Image (cartoon, rainbow, N blue to C red):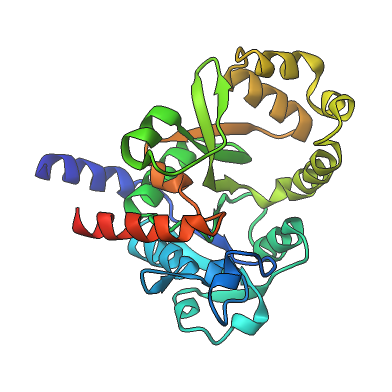
Length: 270
């Protein structure tokens, strides 16, 4: 165990620390309505600590994060948990606006870690692993995901929407990384995807019928998806399959609050 830890420390010593942006904006939803004075779900308490507070604690405990920017309602500026951040910036009406606010001023060519604020069991170790592997990929957009078997091994009670590919079955995670230079093209793609998501012909114009057909049949590979995403954005896109399923455990529903509290207690006693 000591040898493994020393080897891990040596690996992390070679990793350049990244800046991080935590997206804690958004409207008052049904999750936030369960707790008084929570402007949105990021500020809902799980076992006495808000969701965004838990994400900030994991980032601050890691050895691979330099500066932390939180994008949140300015009404939350005085909240104690945000003292762990280096800067608070206002959220926007749309997630693309919040992302733009969070990335403003960062070097366009330096990778920034971007995290959702509703990851109740996120750990410093999971963050360190993601950053170390993202640095090796050297892409403009790195999308985190988790394979179903890894997830079921630890968090079988947590529901997800799964995508069946030839390489396995995956769900999206709550961490990704990008170089700010790609943001204008990414914003445009997100808007196009939002407009096309219920229209097969528009989706086909974005992804191509061949990709949609392979996906529907479970024959699409990660490499094929990466190549098509790279072509759409005009910048390198890679998927990062994390071995840490806590990167994909989030709080989307009211029922997720009690489940998250159970998972936090179990992690604390493990």
